[in-house]
Length: 600
Image (cartoon, rainbow, N blue to C red; front, side):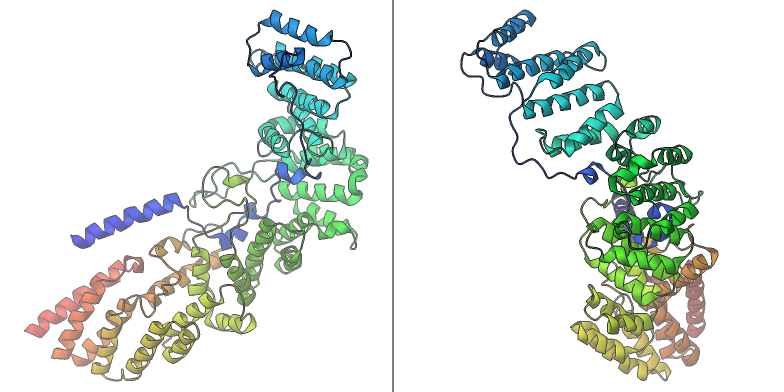
C-alpha cells in the first residue's frame, strides 16, 4: 500500500511537471519541416534608423498653468477644465485671432483641434475619425514644425488603424520608424506595428499584398511578414495523427507580384535582394527546387551570400532535399557569422546537430549538443508551450532531456572518448567526462571509469568504481558473485545510473516508439537504444541476473537461499522506469517456487 501511494504521488507530480513544462526533444527538431522554415520576422527586424535622441512634447500636452489662450486650450485638451463644444470653439478661436502668434503655437492649436475631433470617434462611430483625418491631412500640407508634422502622420495612421485599413496604417508606421526627424518613439511605433499586423498580418495582409509594392521597403516588409512560418495546430502535434502541415501560402500570387515588380525591388539593394525574397517565399511554400535554383543564381562573390537569411534558407532547402552534407557548410557559416543574432546562431547549432546525426558524425554532433546545453537561452526564444510558440523560428529547450539521451545512450563510447580528446575545452566537457565514466562502468570497465571520475574530482563515484573492480574480478564463484550482487543492490542509482543527467522524470524521454518523424530504421534503432539503456542502468536488475546464476550454481544451499531472497527483494524494488513487468513477475514466481522447494 505504501509503495502504491508513493507511485500515485510521483505520477501526479510527474504529470504536473509535464503539463507545466511541455516535453522537449529539441535535438530532434531537424526531423520537422517546421524547424526548417524561414526565420520569423517581427517589427523590430525592420528598424534601420537609430532612435531619435530627444522628443518634443505632443500637441496640447505642455504646461497649461498660465492664463494665455493657448494654455486654456491645452488645459481643455488635458481635461484640466471642462469646456463644451462651444467653449472649445471659442478657446480655439481665441488662439487663432492672437496677433503676432508664433507659427509653432498656431500649428499646435490646429493639431489640438483635430485631436479633439478624433477623440469622439470609434470603430462604431467612424464619422469623427474621418473628419479628424481630413484635418490631419490638411495640417500636413501647411504645417512646418517637424515634431508636429511627425505627430500628425502618426494620428493619420491611427485613424486608418481604427477603420481597419491595415496597409495604409502600416506603411505610415513603417516609414515613421526609419525617419530621422520622427517625434514618435521607437517603442510606440513598434507597438503600433504589432497591433496592426500581429504576427504575420493575417488574411488582411494577404488580400492587400499588392498595395505594398509602391516602395522597396514596403514590399520587402510585406513579403517577409506574410511568409512568416505559421502552423495550424499546437507546437506538439498528436503523435498518433498525421504530420502537421503549415498554413497554405498564396505562392502563385506572391511569385507574380515579385516578377511584376522586379525592377522596384532591385532598386533597394540590387537584384540579389529580390532573389532573397523569392528564396524565402519558395522555402515557405515548400518549393525546394526553386529555392535552390534561386540561390545558385546569386553570384559567388555577392554580399548577400553572407547574410544569415540566405545561409539559413540555403541550408534548409538542402537539408529538406536530403542533401545533408551540402547543408553543413552554410550552417557552419551561419554559426560563425558576426551578423547572426543569438537566435540565428542557436538555430544553426540545432541544424548542425541534425546534419551530423544524419551523417553519423557523433563527435561533431556532440560539439554542438554541448554548446547548446551550456549557453543561455537567446533573447525572445520560447521556453515553454504557451501561446506564441508557433511564432518562434525555433524552440529553446531548458530541461536538458534531449542532451541527456544523447550522452547516456545514443552516442557510442568511442565517440565520447574522441570528443574529449578533440575538444578538451568544450562547454560542458565535465558532463561528457562524467557520462563517459558511467558508460564505462556499464561495460564493466571499472578501472577506466574510476580514472575518468578522478579527472573531474567525483571522488565518491571513483571509490565505488574501484570497489566494483575488485568485486567483479573476484566474482568467479557463487560466493564472489553473491558479494558483487549484494553491493549492487545496496548502491541503487550509484553505479550505472547517471545521476548528473536525470532528475527522476527519465521515462518521458523514451519516445522512440511514438516518434512519428523517424524513418522505420531510425525508430527501430531508437527503441533498441532505449531498451538497452533501461536494462544497463538498473543496478537491481543487474544484481538479479547475477543472483540467478548463484541460485543455479549453489542450489538449495544456505547461499542459494540467501541469493534467492535477495533477488526477490531486488525485483520488488526495481524502478518503475525499467518497464519489464512480465519478466519481473515471472522471475519472482520462479524464485518463490525455488524457496518452497528448498524448504522441503
